[in-house]
Image (tube, rainbow, N blue to C red; front, side, top):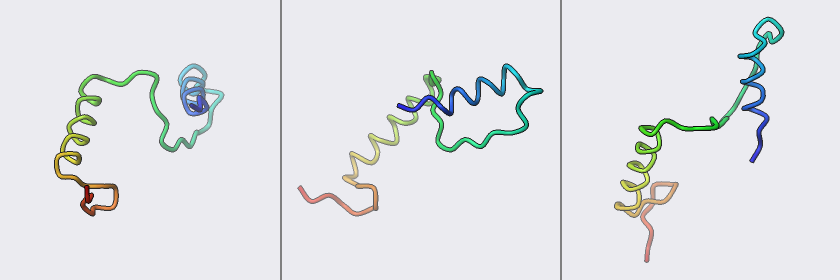
Length: 61
């Protein structure tokens, strides 16, 4: 797993006068609040229950 985004964010927090800006895409935090994890699980369960794949089509088992 890449740590670049986390390092960039921590650097900006610790040294705000030295960092003009950062551009971070899909950076994951070191820890995730419990309600966020529960929300992800809820979405996964919903998709799994409906048999949906990523493109919205139904899985044929």
